[in-house]
Length: 277
Ligand code: C2E
Ligand code: MG
Ligand code: MG
Ligand code: MG
Image (cartoon, rainbow, N blue to C red):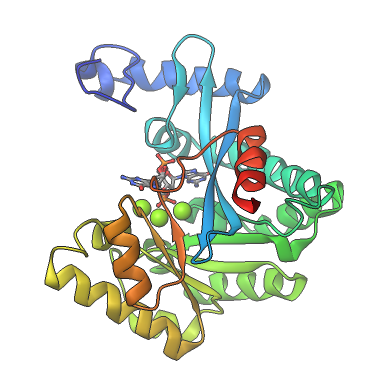
C-alpha cells in the first residue's frame, strides 16, 4: 500500500519471488479467465483539432478481492505461466466486440481501436486465425482495428512477424510501433515492417518541453515518420506545454492524461460525445 497509486500487492512483497506466490496468482488468473474478470479501459487518442480519432485498449483485471489491477501486475505472470494465450484470446474477442458496438453509434463509428500485442502472442502460429475468427464472430470492420507491437518483439523471427502482419494488413488491420525509441531500435525494422504508425515513447515526451535532447529526439522521430509516410502519435502527453511543443514539432496525434486516463467504455462514449460539442 505504501507504494502509492496504481500499485497492488497480493501479499508481502518479499513473497513475490516465491513459488507459492506464483502458484496463487496463476490460479487466480485461471479463475479470472473463467469469470471474465479481465476487462479493457479505453484511453482516447486525439487529433490537434481535439477530435477523438481512436482509443487504446488497456487491459485491467477487475479482481473481486483486490480491485482494479494494472497490466504490469498480471501480464508478466500470465506470460510466464502460458496463460497469456487464453487471456489474449479473450481480450481480442472483447476488442472486436467493442468495435462492433461502437460502429452502431454515429458518434463512435469512426473510432479506431488500438490493441497491444505481446511477443508471445505474435509468435503463436494461429495468431492470424484467432484475429480473423474474432473479426468474423462480431462482424467487426478490420479497418477499425490497429495492433500495437513493440520493437523488442521484433528481434527474433522478423520474417515470420512480417508475414503475419501482411496477412492482417490485407484484411485492413493497421499497425503501430509502440514505445518507439526505447527498444532495440533498428532503422532497418522501420524499412522492412509494413507499419502505419509510430508511437513516440512517453519517456521522450516527459521532458521534451524542457530538455533539449529529449526535444531533439522527439522532433527527429516525427520527421522520420513523415519521411517514411507513417503517422506519428505521442503517448504520455500530460501538460499543455508538452502538447504545444508537439504541435510545433508537427506531431498531430496525442494520447495522455492531459486529455483523459484510460476509462470504461461507457465513459469513453460520453467523452467522445462531449468533445464533439
Ligand atoms: P503501453 O502500451 O505503452 O501503454 C501506455 C501506458 O501508459 C498505459 O499504462 C497508460 O495508462 C499509460 N499512460 C497513458 N497516458 C499517460 C500519461 O499521460 N502519463 C503517464 N505517466 N502514463 C500514461 P498501463 O495501462 O498501465 O499499461 C502498461 C503496459 O501494459 C502497456 O504499455 C502495454 O505494454 C501493456 N498492456 C496493456 N494492456 C495490454 C494488453 O491488452 N495486452 C498486452 N499484451 N499488453 C498490454
Ligand atoms: Mg500500447
Ligand atoms: Mg506505449
Ligand atoms: Mg510505454
